[in-house]
Image (cartoon, one colour):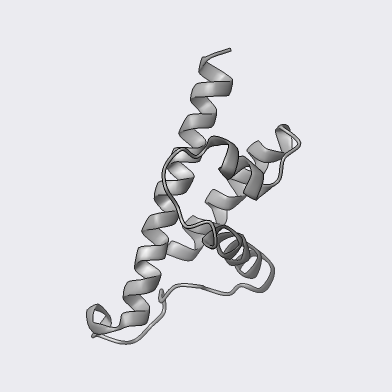
Length: 104
């Protein structure tokens, strides 16, 4: 998987849900995510989407030529941020489905 594209499309998915409820990206996560997450990373996740879609930038080390990534503290930090976002986005989307689609 390509982490930057994964994050960008997950943010876009959450944005679609948010727009259907007249909310923004941050509001929908605060409203539907019931797991613990780092609030300061919400804007960062959104910036990854913007940088990727508008400028083609990759926020993670997808194209790093280092063969020693497991010893690179920047790689480990980015990897943890990626998995944190996967958890937050999955929780947000599934809770929205449960509350809006299933409980209707």
